[in-house]
Image (cartoon, rainbow, N blue to C red; front, side, top):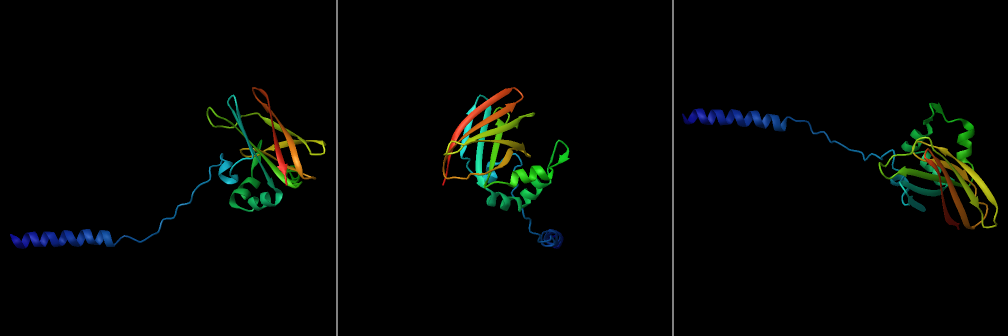
Length: 179
């Protein structure tokens, strides 16, 4: 009887040991995914943020050098292949985005459901320190609006954002200092 228990225990030990030690030693690597709809995760803290009604507006202004560097990343290459209204972005639009000294990024979301607004457009009026007025029509991107802008002089600029959202127009202003 003792021999039976020893034999059964030995067979079970060999069987369980073979299954444990017979497994492959594969390392599983995981990548953190950047949420497509979260511009903040890529650009950091915005220079301007406003919450009015159910509208959350965030603005970033980065140099073209930094923007072009971002476009060399995996995310940037994906953005370069994006389609708007089932058409690829034409060269005129790409050139308009890449001109100027800086890149203006506008992210607008509905705080109720954290989604972008459909059928929206954006325009920015810029008043320079010398009181020159310029206008910039922002291009709709994958999950934000963007456009190239030139800052010729140093000092404080006044920005007026005009949003045309399906439910009407929204306007907000902020100042930003170019050093």
